[in-house]
Length: 347
Image (cartoon, rainbow, N blue to C red; front, top):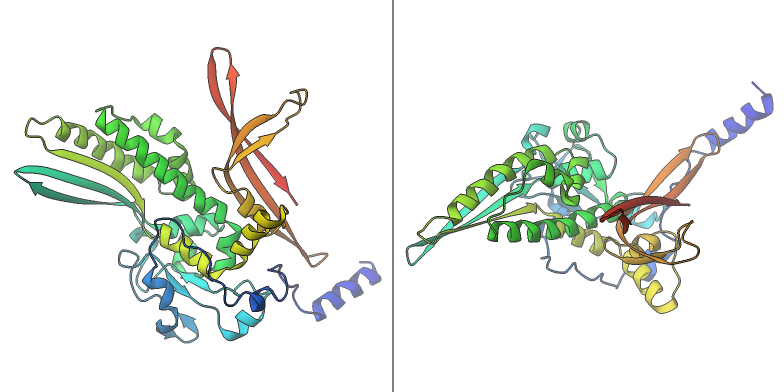
């Protein structure tokens, strides 16, 4: 091996591991008094305020309640990590798994509630999807290993994948609206159609789509049969992701840099790479692009999801961050209109 190259590597090793990229220096100190806006329709989670009360095994914090009782538990940053703005834990972390839980515990389940008014039954069926598989997979963890080791997820890691979590929230709302209209029309949804919806595609990334489809096929058929009864009874069905809205609100509250980025975009018409691009290209954002072959004609499209990825180069000791944007648009193909999805990377 070249002696000069070996000496350079040894000097890098002496200097300690490379620092990860984080928010601009001094930003947290300047924004201590600011409060990020809550997510629309979300309630303040009790889990987001009790992180310091969690019991500990040695130095490792342990989530107190199961995911059924509490989908996540937020722990604020310690004084050391809060002061170290380059630390990935500078904004705290989430616990998703409690003692005694395994990957087999995190399965979609049905929660049905029936009310009777003037002799007429009204049943609300809620298909509840656990949050942990979706967050772990979105943040690039192997789910089974993460549950077994009860790995905490840093808020800053969630910020880098915030476009994926927001897409889940948005597509869940759209899917429930579709499901409601189909039940009102007594028009069942087949397995192939369910799997083509954007919401189920996102759930498949978390490894829970198959079970959700099985439940939906059963509950949709049952609801349509119930709604056809002459007694006037009615059954509705919706899909929920336990704790997702509260988790998004907790991320907003723990990371004031997000609000700063939105204010920068609004007031200065400029955008920072991180986390600004993630706030500019939120899921559902309407965009205009000028693709090749269109002779300069603009094409309207919308943002599907976005995220940041990081690659660490051991040779140079540097971390390279990229922003990935997924958009879709409608084009005419023969006598049909079809959706086309495209992915672009910025760095």
